[in-house]
Amino acid sequence: MALVPYDPEGIGIQKFHKPLATYTFVNHQIQIKQDWKELGVAAVVWDAAVVLCTYLEMGAFNLQGCSAIELGAGTGLVGIVAALLGAHVTITDRKIALEFLKSNVQANLPLDIQPKAVVKELTWGQNLGNFSSEKFDLILGADIIYLEETFVDLLQTLEYLCTDHSIILLSCRIRYERDQNFLKMLGKHFTVLKVHYDPEKDVYIYKAHRRSHKDEL
Image (tube, rainbow, N blue to C red):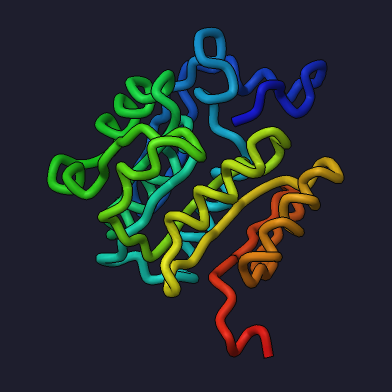
């Protein structure tokens, strides 16, 4: 999660002060509560989340029945859309954001789908043992790779959660050299490919998976 907005002096920040952000995905109207005043960047919808939701809805991956986890979920939009697309999703964030996150998830998922979405505390690099019995097909992250002091913990978390068959999807805006540095760090442990770019929002999606012996040849 960011500590500062992208453009603190620009008009773009105005959308973060709206109490509701409304989207349509998977034939559902999704109304996300925002609370910039109390929770800051953890409680607003960033463009990277919207682009990742659009990418998932495009059908690049069959989410029906797959096991997914969202890291640094914030408002929960990505996890909500993944659940609507048929995934069993563990939607995670730090403890301070959990109640807010739960309220959005519960408000936007039909009762029959709610059991497929579990909200769970996860601080990167900590309490990973709470996830030791879970195997995830898909690991999702929207705008989570730009805070440099979290890079080592985030990488450790990705390595811990990944199996040989897991796919990581990271949606981000590349703003600084440190963002590229994280992708280089990731590339030392995973095969990383750019799979999508939204020129209007200037957001990239990167796909990563564990490097196999075949990849290294």
